[in-house]
Image 1 (cartoon, rainbow, N blue to C red):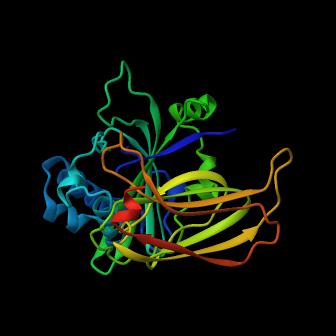
Image 2 (spheres, one colour):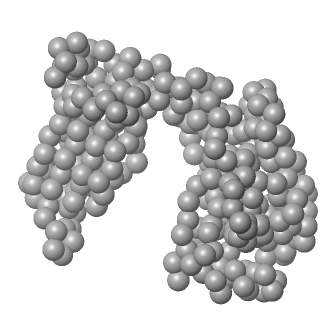
Image 3 (tube, rainbow, N blue to C red):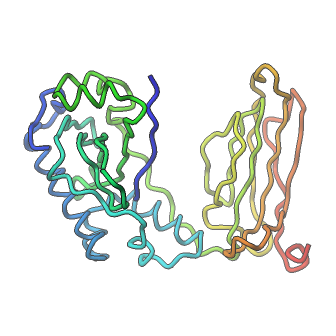
Length: 295
């Protein structure tokens, strides 16, 4: 059975399915809900200090880097979100669990994010938290749409067992992500394009690492953009199996992007290959100057 999942952002009966590891579940629930209510209030009231005091360090830097890289005003843009953070008071808690410095709360019910609809469907809401030196802080939320899993939705409505919560995707990871470095304000807003069929690539651009990409065609924002002048770009390449019916192909392109989406991006540097034995590491020449931008 496949459930459609996406990110949003961004219950009053405790189930023992969610007994936490290392913390009393009732105390954990109370603390995490207190933090979430503080974070939600900060978003609604556009309170920067409260947002910083309730948001994990990792998420603060990650959010700041994304907004600055898109030339959005930070922190004002934090509060310019199209959806409202849902109220959890009317939702039913399924699980409160902590593993190491990570924790979550999982709820079931009508998750209202402020989008106009004839009826708010009953879905799952996962709230994730990270334990910083100051204590638990809210990190992110994830909503699981049960439209394509009606039997799970019905089972939860009847207060049946939520045995799917044993699946790895519903477990706290146990390790917190490293707080990324703060990126500079970009000279040029930029993105990279990767088309990798039969390859896995890992990019490092001006000191920022990106997750491995393989079997995909994606365009992704460059954190910190591209600098005027020389940019340091390394691509690690590994050949992989080619799906039946597909041809091996790799494209990596760097481009300067205009904040106006009607303006076509300017490709600064790119390479393509179909070599089944590519070099393990490739350095890309990525100079940005006025003549390049006039292409």
